[in-house]
Image 1 (tube, rainbow, N blue to C red):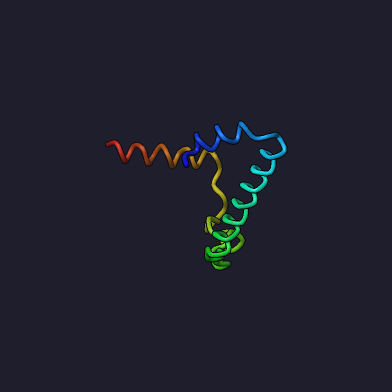
Image 2: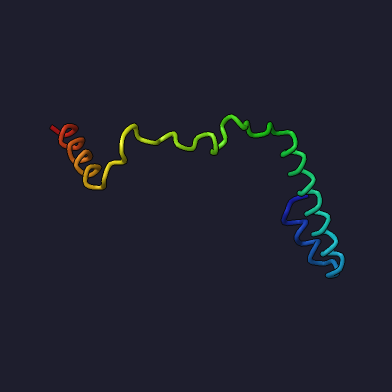
Length: 81
């Protein structure tokens, strides 16, 4: 049975019967989604964002916006010479 046929037949049902069909479809989707989620491996705590905090911290003081712009300009000049 195609989706188009199901929709056509559902239109012939009463409102109460259509709500029942919708409820059953949602329930089956929830069960299927929960089953798939349960079968997937859990995220490893080793790679959590909390453990990555500070990974980009510079060795020295944080550069100013002007220093960052100067470094970028220098990079572009070297790249395109």
